[in-house]
Image (cartoon, rainbow, N blue to C red; front, side, top):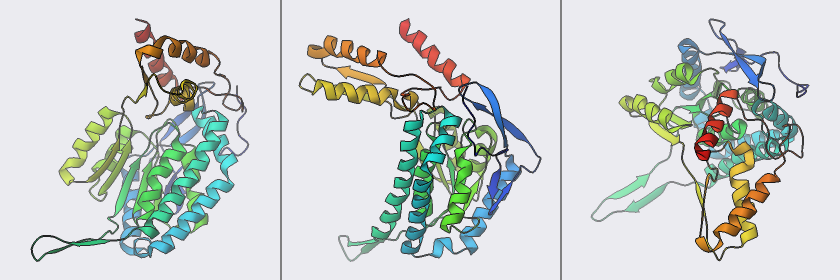
Length: 351
């Protein structure tokens, strides 16, 4: 058993138009702690009516608020403040993320710091960005003018959730859009930290909105909403295919990061020790719960036997332990359902 973090909230709420709120119908769902598989907190569960409120707040902030009209430099300053605050709270963020997702604490700390870097990257990018103008054959002049589009619906997965959220929030906000974030229902805890971070940094009310709940209800309604022209989704390919079908009638702009297999290729002239370090880290880090995991290793025949033997030895030495232990390299998988899925793949491999 893990000890609960000292700063754990009583329950998790939506954040709409600058206020923490429960669902309109009062509905909640259970959030499970990965080590014990026991319910440790309840979260508000959004229905279409809750999504409508969040989208309306984001649309009002876009149409009437100052955010999309700010100069890039002004938004950049605020996003750098967001990064400063995230860095100053990295230990707290890591503790909550580790408890909620099962991620080893040292890796959770690294992901919290990376979230800050994501905001810095886009804060710098929007200041350096420029519009283009160029002649084409004949008498025409073409130009590219970049401007915010509207409300962005952001749907994030349960693996390294806080960092994944920053990947979507930073570019959407940097370019002057307003957002509605729908995090994974397995790991809603760290998402609930964003409202206070944005408020302290100076992000106006309504620019950031958070809804919690199932992808099939809250996520689906967000994707289909006519006032949400931008959708960014990270998750499995089948959901992405359904999402793109639902978004197509309104010709929404889509960013989809879906499932895949990421091979590492090791040739005979490679630095074998470096290749072993890279491939072991690539598949076992973050509990292996990553869409960029090196889940296949293709090795040239000349070194195949030697590589496999050394890879297996390194894998045996990986430290498996509680997420709170700084020595742990692999900890609890995020949810019992995911554990069953992983075990089924192992049985397929044995067969």
